[in-house]
Image (cartoon, rainbow, N blue to C red; front, side, top):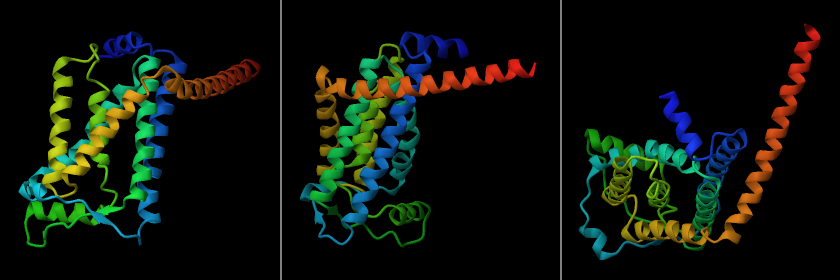
Length: 250
């Protein structure tokens, strides 16, 4: 297993210290910006008028509380696929990270420009699945719905692996199927409506296309290179200092 991981990193040019630092920096940047882009609009627009984008077609989608297992299960999926997405050659890694950051910026803007909400079903009757739905509704208020961040992030999970020949075909196929299952679960748990789902996937895809432009991607590449260079230098200086201390003590 250790040899396979090492070979995977070597094949994707992520075996060097600087490359691993850039990958870690990207994940930290994504997570931090995600928290800001999602949480701040909830606070800022809390008392604003919220629009309901529910369409007649949404009423045709059945309410299926058991699909909350898919809705919650996505967090593990996100973690695995985002790690895979940043463990690839610099050009593709930077493209993915920048696309994700831009997409979250668009979400931030839309959450403020078009605050949204929806009407959730009554889940007060006792029952295993109703208990979990009640828990979900209590921890996640019905706002920041357009676009669906759940669907946007899941589509990025598919983007991050879909053309990767170094990742087994079965896992790439699974990623697509599970991404679509997450789309469905956002509807069947009444967390989102169809407009939210489509917009989430569309924004992710358009942002990824946009960051395919060399000059656009280059902006983030310069930042990540500067950060990795700075951190690497500091780590090397610290290691050299510790080495000198050990030599002097001996």
